Image 1 (cartoon, rainbow, N blue to C red):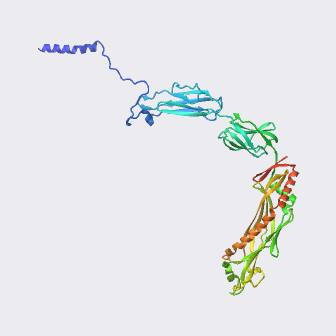
Image 2 (tube, rainbow, N blue to C red):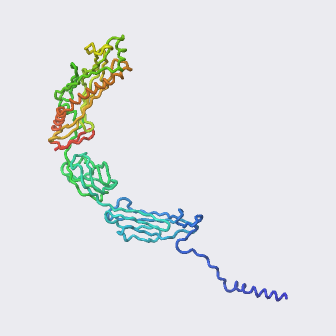
Length: 482
């Protein structure tokens, strides 16, 4: 019984033992990673695909060289590199890189280059063409744009003539938003000279005629990045001479203007002003003025009259008195010839007089104007400034327009500080009267012609025969002449 059981057990185990020692057992198949991009576990995001994850986006570098201005026929190099992300250990994207261009002018652009890093060289298209090159891969794209430059179009130049230092405006299109290597060239006397640029934009350029430009016929052109030139436009370079402060003072000396005198003297009912020196004999009148004392000024009774009931001032007048110039300065400022006359400061330049009346009587019983009953006015820092704007007429220098100004610090004398504000309008009125009289006299053709003639004589002595134009320029007046 026992032997039979052992035999049965051996019969059961025999096949397994033979298999181990005889025919080998086939191994189980190992799972393989499918070809193509793996699909990693999106993780916590339910329903998300790998491309929805920020960490899944590839790092793409796509560049064009040169990156700046590109001209027709230039060789352009496209470079790319794609760095894929790692999602799980030993798993990365293996998607192919795809390149596409929006311009049909580059059919040789590889659409499916081998590998994730590479470069491609091609020729830029026709002038004005534009194209966008896009690199795409699974979970990301990148684009670069290219514009092929066009030649600048120079439509006009303003002004069409000028002297060294003249600002010229070039108007047109396709100049380029930035100057970069672009420049403006003036050709004169057989050579090109680069013009200094003051302002640059795509449609307007401001350039300055160079100092070394030869006089006579010339042309101006715009060179874009030193590669594409505009058409040439005619320009005329003229001779120039500069009127500055030094020349203006020499001209003033020649004409005797440095000895000009302005005198304001008393008259019976007014004051008169006379101009001397190299100017024609001129005079003007500062009319006297009077007015009633305002009620608020009745406080004068307390100040000027020792006892109530005595006469008090009721009418007041002021007259300019012995105002004499003591300095003359000739200069050029703001593109204008400036003649400034200063006045001495001594005594009371504006005399005040009053007529007295009894307070209770309507009419003034004392017809005399008395200085002792009215404060005087001192005109300190008085100055007349005469500004003449230059022009040209018949080939000669002129001053067709002028402005003048009278300034002075008017201070009321002989009254208490608290009373001065009550008299402030009187001093202001006196100042306005003198200012108006100065204007009416100085702003005349006779004065302007005398000054223009003196400067023109100085210019003729330097070889100027006929003036073409004058250009105000800060502390100088530029004169173009023949």
